[in-house]
Image 1 (cartoon, rainbow, N blue to C red):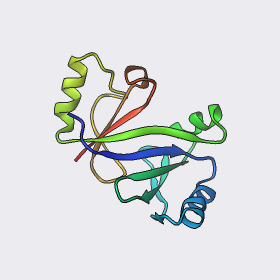
Image 2: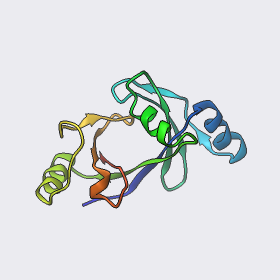
Image 3: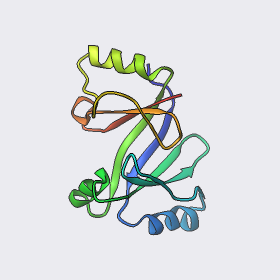
Image 4: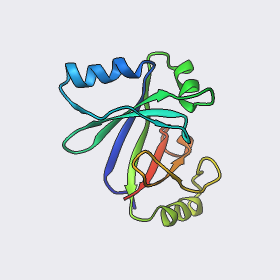
Length: 134
């Protein structure tokens, strides 16, 4: 069911500093920062030959990243994102298998302009999983 690894998301306490590390120290191609108000984050994408790294910064008082950073003040891996061919079909199959979809269960439009869902980390080896329609 799951396809390609789309990205690894890292929550960071200082988005500008993290961007500088990837751009200047590692020599990576880095996107501009983009606010994602619906998700409460600002994103920067690091383009790699085979996938992406998404840097997540806090946006607003209700940002889910703020709570993560309170528990992990230096930041850390927040989630893995896998592509699926049909997100509604994937959701329905996962729910039938007992997996929990976070939120209301309806896909939202993610940072790439495609439908996304998040799956409960307790159902996936302690890892928050994002599904993105390919």
